[in-house]
Length: 291
Image 1 (tube, rainbow, N blue to C red):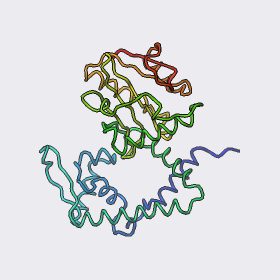
Image 2: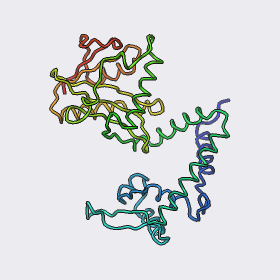
Image 3: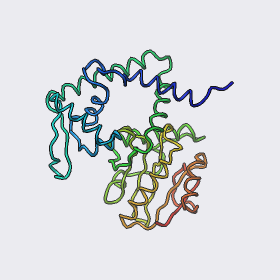
Image 4: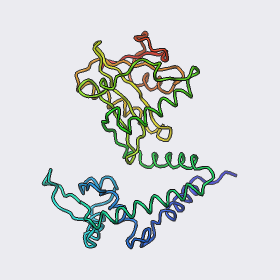
């Protein structure tokens, strides 16, 4: 007899509540509940606009105000007008707040490591956590511009290359693929976009400028934990929008028939199959779209 899906979800919720100490009045033994500690984490070492904190944590105004006031009363934060925008208020950690922030970071990291250490299959545990975090935070995944040589971009690209190597019958070696100059994916010629889920990279795509009358979409990748959430389409839509802003009217891309989900996305999104337009040894499908 299969277990009731709702019961399984509620069991998971109870386990998370217990593991995270959500009901503790002294979260991690620091003398305040989880809510206040979470707000400190959201403020971070650099400070943050209160409107951004509210959106990031999805808190109502009244609750956030009470939590901020409690942290102010403890001397852990200061709240003032945003220097860049007088209509907004900005929260920053005081010196004591920075010390508490670092204490929370050390304790939280230690608890996380202890959980991994006592599990017989830590990579499976992490994969399950990534899947759940992506599903719960799907509406908060943001797409931002990043340099192709930045750490989030490199993580995505290396993950992309590793997946191609596993899925292509002939393997994949970036050195043997068509040359891709990072400058072609930097403004003003192009752009590199990274999808961030609570700060962690979950996908990428590059818009490569050329001198051939068209630009190219390159390196579209979404983490397995975030697939099925519409993220690939969001990345494509965002890259097409950047292309229009840059005055590009024609886009091209290539892919391999070993990636049928990619080809299906392009076909559903108005891309037309065309003849080969490059000598890259890996792709066997070629598409174009007017934007």
